[in-house]
Image (cartoon, rainbow, N blue to C red; front, top):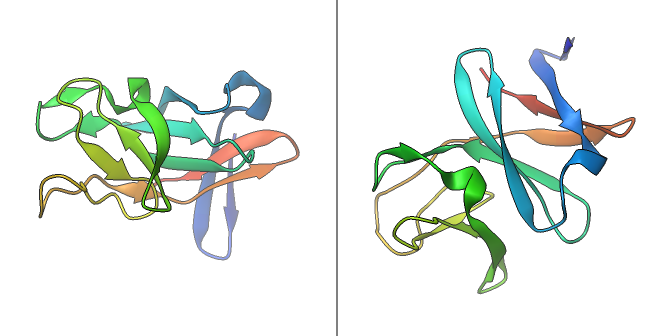
Length: 114
């Protein structure tokens, strides 16, 4: 289901209970493959699933954690860390993955993908 609020188009991707804490899952929103992560505090983040350094859709399988107070996902391929709020690779300057607004509404995870 897709809803529009104040110019933002939200798509439901799963139930919050479908996501394990500190884990990710892949979802297809339109034609965009995203990675959705449930953090330890129950909040959710969404990034592109495509890891640019290895050119594979694998970020949803990464390790979720923190580095320097930032929420991150570590690529399962080459172990680079990506900031879940900005998409910036903390290990290779200039490398960035897209981030998308994510929220939990009525127990459902919703992501806004342009």
